[in-house]
Image 1 (cartoon, rainbow over the protein chains, first blue to last red):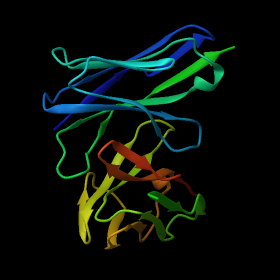
Image 2 (image 1 turned 60 degrees about the vertical axis):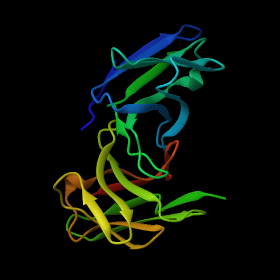
Image 3 (image 1 turned 90 degrees about the vertical axis):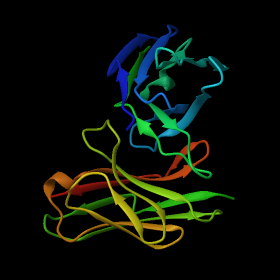
Image 4 (image 1 turned 120 degrees about the vertical axis):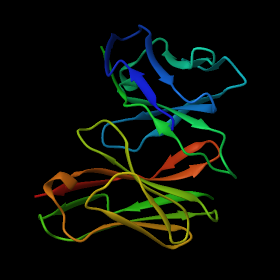
Amino acid sequence: GENVEQHPSTLSVQEGDSAVIKCTYSDSASNYFPWYKQELGKRPQLIIDIRSNVGEKKDQRIAVTLNKTAKHFSLHITETQPEDSAVYFCAASPLGSGSARQLTFGSGTQLTVLP
Amino acid sequence: SQTIHQWPATLVQPVGSPLSLECTVEGTSNPNLYWYRQAAGRGLQLLFYSVGIGQISSEVPQNLSASRPQDRQFILSSKKLLLSDSGFYLCAWGRLRGYTFGSGTRLTVV
């Protein structure tokens, strides 16, 4: 089955700096890679995703890159703000059956943005 | 609209007592449903998943069980809680674009 590794486990940056979180996956059949943000005591929420037919996707201050050959993908947050502080999870999913996918999650990264 | 509901939000239970957490989905049919647990405030551990009524797959041996009595209802249960069952429990609905999570249940076993 799929195995997803995520690094670093904790990350502290100064407000305004950039943050990068990296994940690797093992199953070459995986073709969908979402990122979730979980604020303290709340549910994880999807912030951005990428499919294997593209190498990069941006949404304002957030971007995700994918290297299929190396089987790794990364989350980039620019101009970090205190409200970006949260736990971030990467995930990977192979081709799903029907209309749903089964995700394998990374272990999470605690991002702290220092004012 | 399509939504997922999970309750209760918080629960404090004594060791040895039973547990029942409920998750329901609205606005869809035959959803894939999942139960996750977060211990130590970080990793998402998959406990159970279900692709249909009465179909339950268990990912890890444990003190918990799951049931799916109706298409859009997923229940997490225990007959006797252990201290190690404390954690944040999340129900999730599998969709084409990843998961939508319920709001979670904070369980403290005392």
